Amino acid sequence: SQTIHQWPATLVQPVGSPLSLECTVEGTSNPNLYWYRQAAGRGLQLLFYSVGIGQISSEVPQNLSASRPQDRQFILSSKKLLLSDSGFYLCAWSIHEGSENGYTFGSGTRLTVV
Amino acid sequence: AQSVSQHNHHVILSEAASLELGCNYSYGGTVNLFWYVQYPGQHLQLLLKYFSGDPLVKGIKGFEAEFIKSKFSFNLRKPSVQWSDTAEYFCAVNARYGGATNKLIFGTGTLLAVQP
Image (tube, one colour):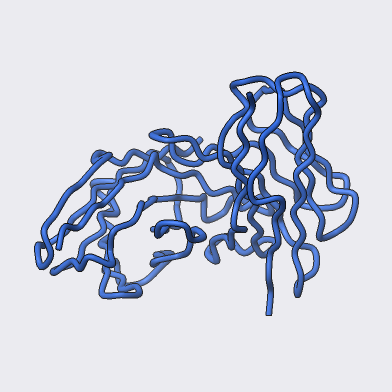
């Protein structure tokens, strides 16, 4: 069966420090991968999505970047964190070209920038 | 581009009360519609979905939702809520023929608190 792993679960980082959040999927190949940020009262905002290795699309301009070095690995990064980067980050995967199947979400990372 | 509106941000109900959470979407083409639920401390999980056929869809735990195309709505309902239904509920939509990207657009969520 397919599983999705996301780590770390919680992270406290100082302003200006770098960030790397990792997400991996098991049990499937060539998935679509997504990074969302969940903020109170603002729902889930799509940050990045990827339909293949090295293919990244950004939905909103921001201080973050994403990379997909392997088929089932999706990384969210920042060179210098801002206070406004605090939030709950969720990774998700879906079947390629299967729009009616929805997503499977990871357990999320709670990032606090101090 | 698609957008989703959830009108109720916080809902407080007593056990056995009926529930209806509103969801409206904006998109000119054919859509798939979803409701996700996030119980305290748990993953987001799929509650139900609609992509074709009977516009009244039934999901897990006694939830159902009705797609009304003329109103661009996909409201979630449950006849009698339980304390264990306390959670945050998200409506989401994607374009049926959106190609490989399969992007889901989410509403802002509704926090439901059920009082015993």
